[in-house]
Amino acid sequence: MAPHNDIVVFHYPFSPYARRVIWYLALRGIDYAQCIQPVTLPREDFNALGVKYRRIPIMTFGRDIYCDTRLILQKLEEKFPSGALGASQPDQKAVEKLLEKWNIDAGVFIRAAQSLPPEMPLLNDPKFTKDREEYTGRSWAKADIARMRPEALAHMRDAFDLLETGLLADGREWILKTEKPSLADIEAVWPFHWLSEIKGALPPNLISSKQYPKVFAWIDRFQKAVSSAKSSVPKPTTLKGAEAVKRIAQAEFSDQEGQVDENDPLGLKKGQDIEVWPIDSGFKHHDLGKLVALTAKEVVVTGQTKTGKEIRIHFPRTNFRVMAVQAGGPPKL
Image (cartoon, rainbow, N blue to C red; front, side, top):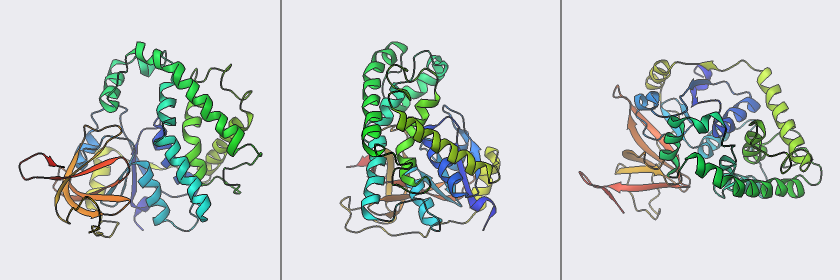
């Protein structure tokens, strides 16, 4: 196996999405390298890789580049099956998936982000707020942040309540009653953990360990488990951007090329020119290339580094648009 399992994670530590992947790698004891990115655009390392997608994190495994934490965690489960954190029973797999969708697709994380206190330094940084307006397509003006916050906090109180009186009500330590944190805990905990660490994000008269003792005890247990796991393995090697890009360009592909599902409703063909982009955030950044693989869960498109080396960029199907591109013209619906 290549150094660091041929894995490089591009992220910045404050990213709540990146933490999902970093926690997973720590709990599994999987060796990896990291390349720290700026909080706002431009991200020159992405440009050097030939990736237009802007969201953090991305994970490279050889010359395969995986976008979106849903797909990244799935790939890590597949590539390191011994000791995987995912559920094995169908009903538990369903809970795991529903927790993923609850936090990402059903609005919990969006409401968590809207709960941030307006006086937070980043929210008073014009460069940051302008970048996030481009990213989300909505206003990040201080007055608008303050206006949205009460509604967001009401939503988060409801989310805390569901955990306290539902999933954690019987006093279990972990979501699926496992002996240690599972993938279901990662899928469930990350927005709540993130908010609990930000000073002033959760008004103590509304959301605290007093109102939600089981939830806060679970968050604390999870943090201790991650900290313990991190202390028992070497720290990840941190690579400079140029070094990371060079390493990736010199590597082999880690995934088989894959096939295109001929029964997919999009009716696309292998080798066809396509365009892929997220439709929930970061939607102004489109990756164009030739279709390598298309399944019910994944789309793979070719890309090219600045030095001309071919890469393959992987996206999940959920909340991503895939469209054919006419030669010399706009995407074809």
